[in-house]
Length: 228
View 1 (cartoon, rainbow, N blue to C red):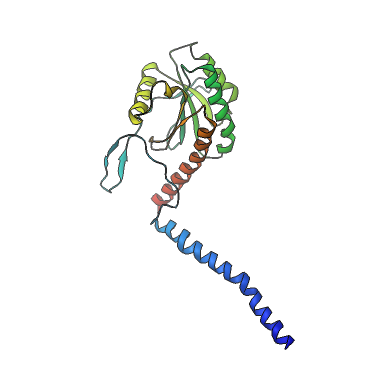
View 2 (view 1 turned 180 degrees about the horizontal axis):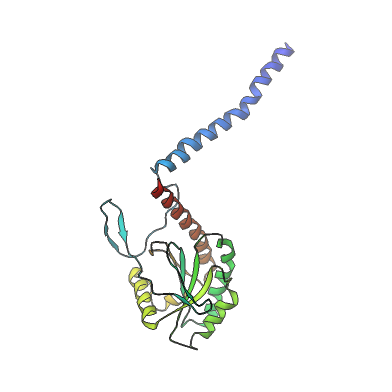
């Protein structure tokens, strides 16, 4: 009798380990892996697009507002920024209050080491290259804290910076010239606006950090689908 009971225990005990493992494997295969491969459901959270819809392609895809970039020039590195295929965070570092600029820089400095593993990511602090001394405070704030790897300041012409600002004001109806000063914008490799945050807010910059990771996942996912 004792030997029969012992045999039953030996048969039942492994079941408690095997059954959950089989269930988890089945759940992963049918509800995660298969939909991901077939692209039937959005496994990744997809960020919204900012700006007016421009139309629809022949494939049925939506065309969104696309930024017209100026030539971003780095006075420190003596080179232009190659924007191809990059995720970019843009900040206008001119005509901003010194304390607010320090807050924006401190918040960006806090997150940059957490996202510097993302290939191609750049933090771009834009200044008016036609003004020699007016933006010195902003430049020094950026220079003091940027890593030199993913964050640098870039100068553009006065007309180019005005054009870029107008594009953001057009794309975000609630944005004003005053709120533009502390704004951070997340731009995808297609030069489309995917996020807007206030750099003097810790919570907003935490959201920026999280959404950079989300956007990077989306970009990788789209590239993989294009290859297939």
